Length: 274
Image (cartoon, rainbow, N blue to C red; front, side, top):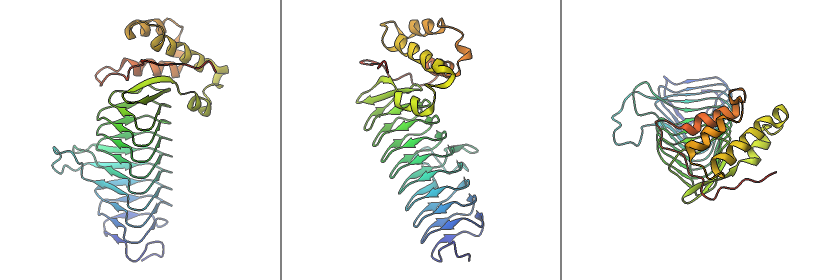
């Protein structure tokens, strides 16, 4: 047994581990698991099911990945978990596999998933997402890239959280969170654009700040004008050739939210001028 694998680890002969993978004491890895180069599996981690994990991930103590869905409708269908590269999955995180045959719970690249987070069946998490401690993510949730979820947030099943959104700690998220905004409270409300996230992303300086100015105008129309949401959307589309501003286009397409749970409302929303 290679020195990088602790002698107490239980690894099924059918599992495929790159020679550079390190596995800690008492970890358990099932027969269908595949793990890429330079990934570190700490002690007492359990990885089972049809689970593929990419390169340079670090999975911390006690995490459980690829186990059966907790949905009562799940009857053992052969489903998957797919995890990309460069993720940090902290202590006691649980990531369940999908509910239906051929479907996958998906985690992208460069994410930080902090301790005690639960990611349920059929979720999709993009890239460079931060999910803070003790967040519970219901089934079929989509979290787009660069979103930040504060600690102890509860996210209802089938919700979608947009790119570069920020969700404040201890919020209850039962409807979609638009991209680029700050949402917090109980019940949750859209409060402002996520100015800190936008600044860190470079979007404020991209193309001389044109995308940010367009988002700022759109936000004011949608959340501060007093217009109905459909009227405000129509006004936003008159701002200019929004198709040429990909961030505004994404914001508008997301806001139409056809076939989903609807948007978090914006009562009490404010927007700083900075």
